[in-house]
Image 1 (cartoon, rainbow, N blue to C red):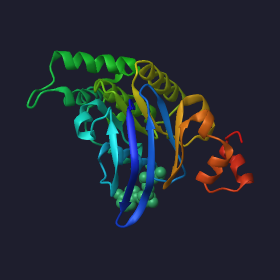
Image 2 (image 1 turned 60 degrees about the vertical axis):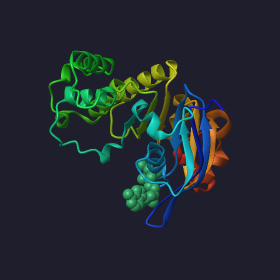
Image 3 (image 1 turned 90 degrees about the vertical axis):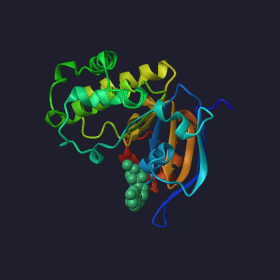
Image 4 (image 1 turned 120 degrees about the vertical axis):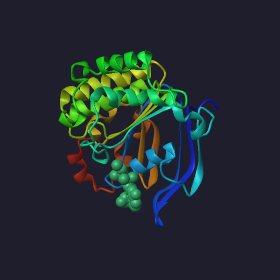
Length: 247
Ligand code: ADP
Ligand code: MG
């Protein structure tokens, strides 16, 4: 029972419409885990339910054998791009500094130490030269890098990224993937919602295939095979070729 995360019989619904049905899985720490499924499959809902951002109808979730509330400060979350208000007037450096807040005491303001950490995190994602820019002035890839820097500043054990590569340039995707594999090497557990099926095998150790129900959860080599992909995406075999997955 040394799982970093355990989800048991998770059910979530919105206004009586079931979004997730009896989803169960567990993973050890130090894994890079992809979450795949078609549009509207419940991928974002799964992340939000784990994070306690949407209520669950039933089920049990534990992280490091603790409740989500107990581990809250060790969780970093980068929401889906289109769920973030990018026009919000905030400087890049302040966005990253926000990441240090969970570890500050009540009523304490970030000091020298936190500011230094924020700059170091910006350096890691190659965005230090943009620290005095407004977040709204950046490209999609740059914004996503800044949000990753904020997550790094949180010094979390668990990272949740919802479609981090949508609408970003190849260079930013490469930078982000490198950082995620470094985090993994440090023993962190990282979940990434990802829709490009052709990258699953090269990017991830494990995969969660979801479409309301669970279609597989475990090592990519074992779980991510053509039949499961077809079932999860509700597709007939010729259409599967367009998805870029080797089946
Ligand atoms: P995905 O991230 O896989 O595209 P979501 O988790 O966003 O899927 O959505 C799963 C289902 O739940 C969809 O049918 C979606 O319309 C519905 N849904 C998501 N969020 C809400 C919400 N806040 N209120 C009502 N329905 C929602
Ligand atoms: Mg989503």
